[in-house]
Length: 215
Image (cartoon, rainbow, N blue to C red; front, side, top):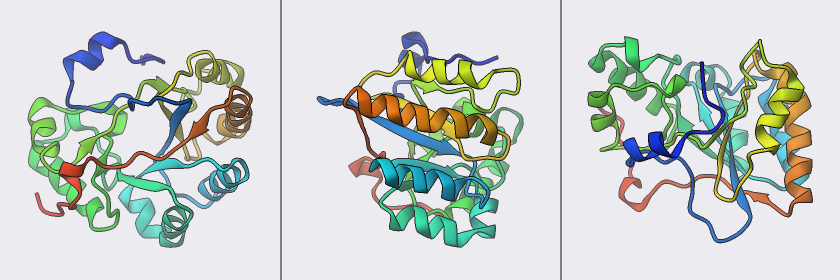
């Protein structure tokens, strides 16, 4: 089970996580999890270039290791990248030191101070340690493109019905999400343009400007 919109109560319970970005203009923050992979990520990059939108890609380390040229392209085209662990581990079921080492392994490939936990799942001790070195980026709006039980039309509805300035919106550049993403993403970008929105990439806070590669 998951919530399309992150309730304010949950956001208030974890104030050190970033759930949205304060803005004074019509701007959102598109994010893509689980890539980079050749079947999906280049298509996403082509589409973003067409619309002149920027995004943040939370990359799995083992994919970055396999496809460094795609990672290089993401950065070269002005997007930001974030650490999504080396092989998409679930913090709730992973011993803390093992989890930290998995993040560190990814950090040697993904030069970023942004971190998003897979599934959004972190134990309190994990969060306490990680936020010393990273901005933990969560989301205000989840598209549901990963959900096989969700139609692509409902996935689109999840996004376009809940857009608001400063929203951090999650998509996935993964094979699992590909069918829905190819339907939803172009229509979402059209909708954003029609409403006068732009999309920018998430930048690390000043306190986390230097990457920590040891745990």
